[in-house]
Length: 293
Image 1 (tube, rainbow, N blue to C red):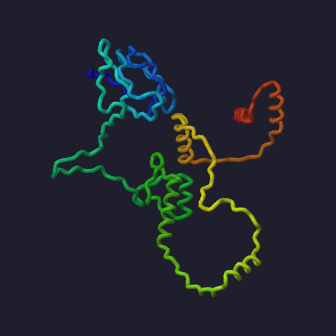
Image 2: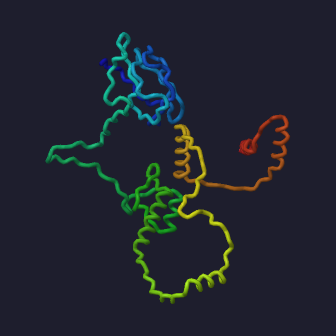
């Protein structure tokens, strides 16, 4: 076969780790010049057009349209030089699969016997030696329940001990207490004397009359679940959700509430709506804040 020119999944944004192939502009056998649009790739921020860096012929598309979560550096297509038979291109054994990333520098390889390799020192939280940075919510939980933050590694950015870390530490403490509790054996109760079933039914019916209500569910049968349609989120939506969750869980929030009389604003909005002028209440709040400042 003819060795091909590899086309790899590029990094089209600083935070991109994987992408989706939205559309191919070229098909197999088409001539490609440097700068031509090859395909559209959906990153974690936008849909970007990928351009060719080489001249040649598109010999093989290894990742089809609609493929999702393609890792960076994965082989997505092969080119051959002009004049070569593109149908005879040699497809690598790992064609279409993500290429193995280079091992990080700190990974230790096998060493001959007798050779000692010093491992990097492991940082541990020791009481009284390391100053733990606490978020306000985490500090409140630790002080309320008397917890030691040095018993768990902080998971927040820049080593901040977050609210989630404090709750996790509290759960571990509660689990430890529950495991120490011994089961209490209740004294044996005297067995009731046997009563004829006919008398039991009469007594129960007369003392606790029950209305004839049909059962909510049938024993042995699962309740019918509501139908729904699952719509997969795009990469952009997933990144937005991830960032909002990180902001809510790692950054302290403060809230302020106040009562306001906005009858005049609502009346003005109705008058403006008659002239097809759409103004929200938030617009008035922003304007008032700007004038005040």
